[in-house]
Length: 196
Image 1: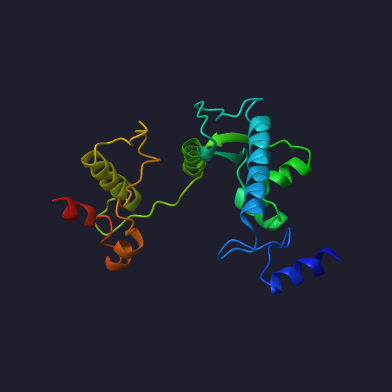
Image 2: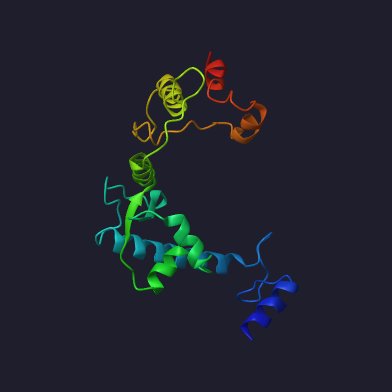
């Protein structure tokens, strides 16, 4: 019954939740969209608070901005876990809430999450792959990144200066076009010519 109502409203170009006129390009009206966003935010805050030791903050650095916080799989395997549970209708936060807050998760900010991932990757043994000059490709790229980031000031406007999480942002939002215009293998050298 619910599914047929949803389909009927969708075909009639009405809000799928209340039957009112939808927002342009959306399947729901402004009021229903605002209600769903408020509900999703409340669920996210609840889950982040639970896994943040009863405070809505990063358990490593103390970051409190909701937009920067996320859930981390403590033992890794997040990608495989998301595949195994499938795409949940109302998102991962609601899935955690409905499952009764299972153990094995924690609240981290995006930066700490990236740092934790990179630390776990570094701890895994890797085969020694060398390029033609004998210099390790990963080490070469790291040196280029460090030099490039130092040229840009070495820190983010928020104060972050950890090289593992710093990235260059195209201020005119043409990053995709820029990457497509650069031949493969030349990407790491390109920023220097652009800045010179």
